[in-house]
Image 1 (cartoon, helix red, strand yellow):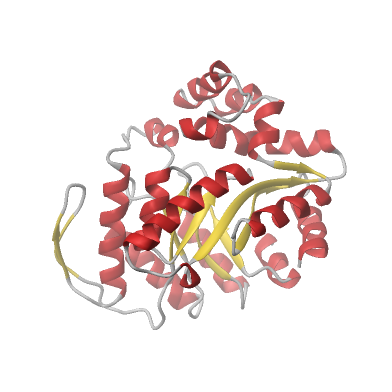
Image 2: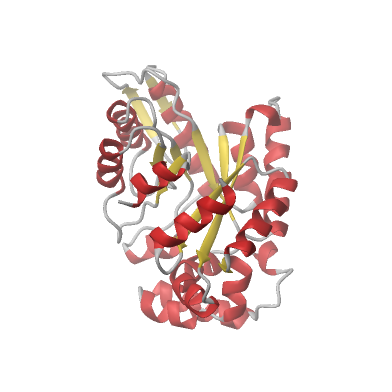
Length: 308
């Protein structure tokens, strides 16, 4: 099991993606919690459009019990293309995530929630059990307003970007949010969620990264695409396939330029160099994101040997 190997190698956290086409996130997290002892675990990231925040609060509190205090919660607005496939329209992403965090935080503190918002309502909602420990909440994404929201409301951020320019822009927005909420950056976890595919064979590494890059490229904000030499029509082709649920075709439509911009592929030295750049920008944590490599176990060992 990859999570058990990650723990053995010295990694500190394991994040599990929350998409309808993958294994159910909390079922998988429960299995990981029972198979590990030290690593912290959480959905990276869930969204409030498919699951009400009160249900998410219950789920993450349960994971915290099963894992003996190791739960983390990553949340954002969801991938609009995957939501559209199941007939859900992403609406008011900032408001929905803000309201979700408000509800979840109160429930996890053992408080009763009476709230009527633009996206969600609770009328005397409360959990019948209270987590013994504080569960850190991370906001995922890379758009400026979502990053600012992370600084205003959360304990950390999962910046969904591999490129230092994107991370630098995102961190500026997070710090604006921290400043407006009167909080110090010293108490905040700046995590860069870096799509990685490490292998001595660059061609194999790039091929393994295609599926992940399809979603990263398709959801890239305009400010992120503005400083890249990737034709808008190439991005739109990928988006078009994803809108129709044709994920295999979207994967094949990904260009080498997209892969090189939105992922770190090739020899482990490439990743080491990228990690050093991100840390200089102020990243306090680097998340080695999917696919890790053509052979995930071997790539993980190589990464651990050079970075831990």
